[in-house]
Amino acid sequence: MKKILYLFFISFLLLIFTSCNNSNNNLQNDLEEDEMNKTLQLIIGDVEVEVSWLDNDSVNELIQYVNDTLDIKLHQHGGFEQYGSIGKTLTSNDKRIKTNPGDIVLYSSNQIVLFYGSNTWSYTKLGKMNLKENELYELLGKEDSITITLKVINI
Image (tube, one colour):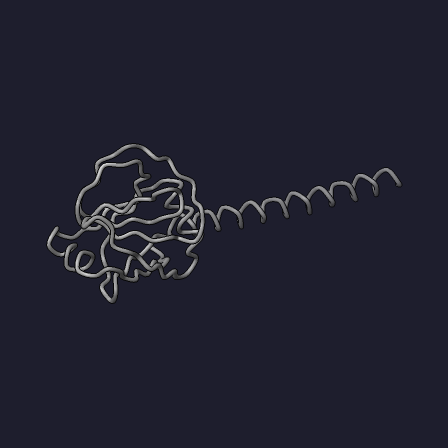
């Protein structure tokens, strides 16, 4: 009789642990799926800009870091870009590339750069603003500094 009770008790414990483990796995899977369904919205001043974000570690870390919204002050540089500190170092995979108007890149692992012109340097590409060159200049090229907002949205 003791053996039967012992076996029953062990079986009961295994059932509970297995059930808890499955619940944790399901919760983890739900959280990972929720993270995969998030992207960033870019707002320049008060203009929402459509962006095609890349699927890479840098963008994924940026989404995690932003969490809800993040305002970043950008500064004019060289007559072709606006750049500013993200406030955190992100994973980067810098390669020497030629940027084009609309490109969004990570520079030095902690600076976001929005291009309305072109440049060649080592960057990690983050995405591309879906605007024409003259629209980019209107938003980025006329001021010494601007503020952008990154906002996490569900897709």
